[in-house]
Length: 324
Ligand code: DAH
Image (cartoon, rainbow, N blue to C red; front, top):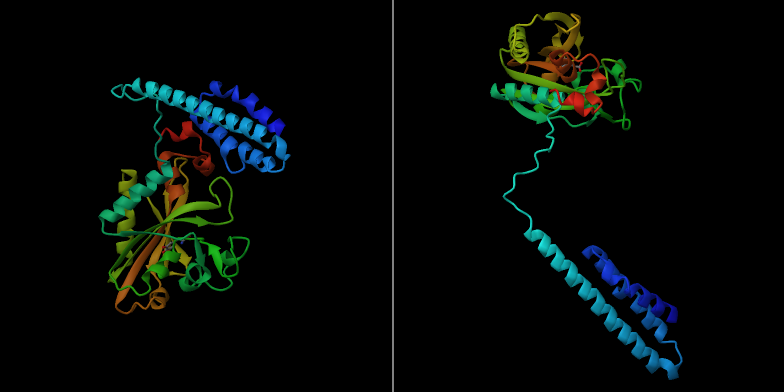
């Protein structure tokens, strides 16, 4: 106990050098908190011989008073200093001109542009979940039980029923069940596949557009896609339409455009919604028909800004990103 008293006396000499309010408060807790020095002293005090108790007790009380006085004095001093400092802040001075403002990532620029374009045409935005169950990602979209994309080699499975979505198309059946046409949706999402090279990353962005109404046909689909691409690239661009197969559309097609190296690359998968899909969501396919397409955002962005390697989009190189 006497050692502790000595220690406090020694420490008290340094209180006047403390400049930070936080620090002085910490010291206060160290001395007077629940597990503080003075509480420890009081516990030890109980066990000292009766005859020296009054003398030691007086000593402790004196030290306690002195310590409180020193701490309070220093607190006051620091407070006064802070006040003085505040007085000198000139709020009429202009702000710091050296702040570097960030800018939107090219992927975000593309997504925002497309969302706005389709919103103006009356398509409502919804967002895809990243984790979905097997029914919406595969079964409800008529993807057969032994389709290769279901394998562990291609898809990130969470467990036997849940997975990271491989395509934004899974929003089609999820959204449409219990809905009545007309349906006009744009859906934005991150999708996941086990791919990694110059043009593929394990996560990428897709936008899914679908429309269900009376008399929707293939020329409606092509008309929308062509106009969208011409306006997005701000010039009339050549497209190549190749017939394809997607289990959830019939007929199906892939849309190709030329990149800056003059190579054709696929940027959209599309088609007329398969009657089986409409049946799965209780929409009468004898009365209604629908169109759907999925846009690869990274690819579209790479063509627009002449980016040769998809990985550049994910490097977080500020200098490179600043050019957009
Ligand atoms: N989900 C397809 C993919 O990721 C793309 C696609 C094809 C979307 C046809 C559609 C569609 O909406 O109708 O490859």
